[in-house]
Image (cartoon, rainbow, N blue to C red; front, side, top):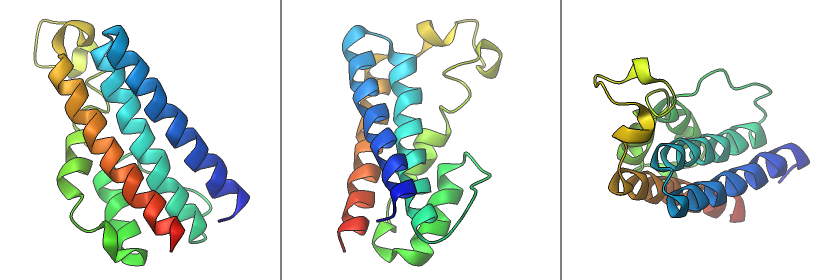
Length: 132
């Protein structure tokens, strides 16, 4: 693995650790967003390893689709990617929710645990791709 993808993967792991910390602290919206960020950076690391110089989307479903062309073992993670895509904006911006609540009030522990689980699945699969 090249040095640039290594940096991205290290940051993905750090984001996942931050998501766990946010979950423990009760900051569920941040745990969801940090989980999304961990998965995004992990997938970007794979694409950078394949020679991509820039990645211009934040959609995990799109990143996963592209990465699966190089790493077919990633197939089957679409639902996790879509679940994390759904929290990309709404966890940070009150006007992105169809609710009178702020993101800090809207997201539950269960939401955060689900996002964390999705990100862990994606990160684990990415690490396996680098190991082959």
